[in-house]
Length: 202
Image (tube, rainbow, N blue to C red):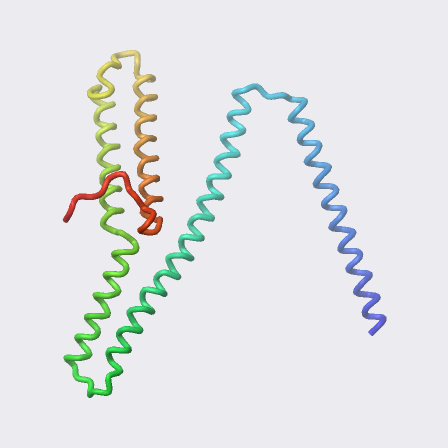
């Protein structure tokens, strides 16, 4: 037992030493990289390009984490919805009476309606569809306007295509940002979500 303990401590010490060497090497490499950045002193345009690449990586990480947590939340919410409806259904069947095809059919239909109502209220499919279609129509309107030179782009004549495209890009990004904001509001609990506009009554 003592021999095994000594051998374990020896190898554990070797692993710790190796880990410390790797951490020291990594710190040294990072310091060298920072020194190179300071010496090179890139201009503003290069710094913006580097920042754009770093931001892209950060955005991808945020989106991946968001999708992961949304999937977990939706899975748990689905379990709650089906579990609640199943509990009500089982309680309705456990009445001690003889089961007939009419009673079983009625209970199954009630279960399906309860689940559908819960999913509709939670996921807000109608609102999501409305806002997505609204954003698509707005972007399509911008595409047609910039192509035909009408509306907000009527002032940009020949030779000013770059200015028109700049304005087009800004307006499309505004529409997309508005859609993202609405999406976030729909994902919030009902007592916190206050969308800027509501879809018309069906």
